[in-house]
Amino acid sequence: MDLTQSLLESLPEPHLILSRSFSCLAVNNAFAELVRLETRAIVGSSALSFWPTARACAAGGESTVELRASDGRAITARVEAVVSEVIVVRVLASVASGESAQLHHKQRLETLGLLAGGIAHDFNNVLTGILGHVAYMKHVLPDSGPDRGVAGDSIKAIEEGAVRASGLTQQILKFSKLDSTETSSPVDVGDLVGRVAALLKSAIPTDVALRVSPASTALRVLASESHITQILINLIINARDAISGKGAIDVSVEGRCPEEEVVRLFGAEPIASAYGAIVVRDDGIGMDEQVKARLFERYFTTKSSSGTGLGLATVNSIVQQLGGAIEVISEPKKGSVFRIVLPAVTEQVVQNAEVAGEHGGLRKGKGERVLVIDDEYAVRNVLGLSLSHLGYQVETADGGLEGVEKFEQSPESFSLVILDLLMPGLSGEEVFNRLRARNPQLPVLIVSGFSSEHVVQRVLEDGARDFIQKPFSIEVLSEKVRGCLRD
Picture (cartoon, rainbow, N blue to C red):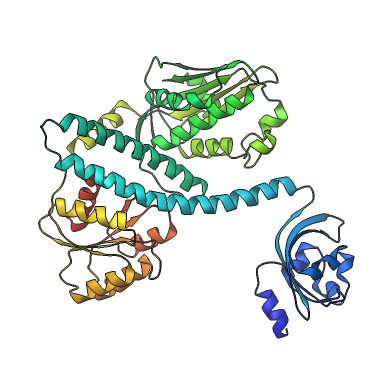
């Protein structure tokens, strides 16, 4: 293989090199596969045989073109041509006929996901600072005084807004595939339904009634609130879009499902001892059997350009994770009923969770020296402030290099290092390895916005003591730090 061919094969995108007379001089396998031809059949042939408008690329730059595969398929491609003694063509994106809408849609969503993930990461850092300062203010504000009531109300409002924004950020991270593993706890579904319905009222047209029926029996499920919130939002918005003109959406909660229904959905031996259901009904256009069969496919939508095809796929994914099932009843012009059947937690589990939450409080430090390494000022600042308030001596570093330098000045003096993993320059994992090389027993607490990020898992497996997810409260921070110090 000559050097040119070797270089072409090292490139992931389809590439083609043409002479000024549009004869094919070289091509990589990625391009050959795109047009369903052997490499040797392309080299030496005219590009016009599979690219009728190839002459237009002599002007250089980016353009959208149509290629012809050997099996007759039309391939719409976005190409970039660089013109010199030869013409180097790079295929930026391509879609075969019959797949255009779905694949273009998928590519756009993947790009949006990457962008959303980056924005959500930065926003998470801002929220960490806000929530951290709010938690600090709650603990240092005097218990009494003329301004205690007003200040307390304002702090509570700020905290609630930031917590809600944090939940939305986690949903963005999930969409962008920077998924975070959230802690599950018993969720009161009836209470959450009321709060989500109130939140969505402004998103429902005035001629569509959104009605919530109170649960006769409480339903608690072991989940994160954001997961149940995602289910509710997607189902209610889906119901809204199914209604043309006047109509109604009814949301109800069933604390216990009949045993025969559970057996029908889960088999003769369901895993959980009891199940409950979230039910969303609408009197919209309904669905035929063909649509119902594809309802939970990713990117499948009946809403033309306004739908992503991800809403119900997300619902299905969450329900499966929670060990539940979905039943859909619908006919054309007769509306739809979505029943989300989920395992119900026992009263003992609820009581245990309540007891675990009661011991709470702040676990104070004993003057230990802690090094905080984080490139984000908001996070670094609130960590330093909170740890000082908890009784620790705090040293901060604004990145990996400074962190390593400060640690190496007195490696035995630090009782704990709190380390952000996602930093520019010297990464958190590299910092971790350098610190542990100097002090193999050094306790390290990892900080990140993404608990499922593979590097987080790897560093924990390599000996980091624990992980704390942004944003966090001062109570959680105090618990994590004492846990890492093992007392």
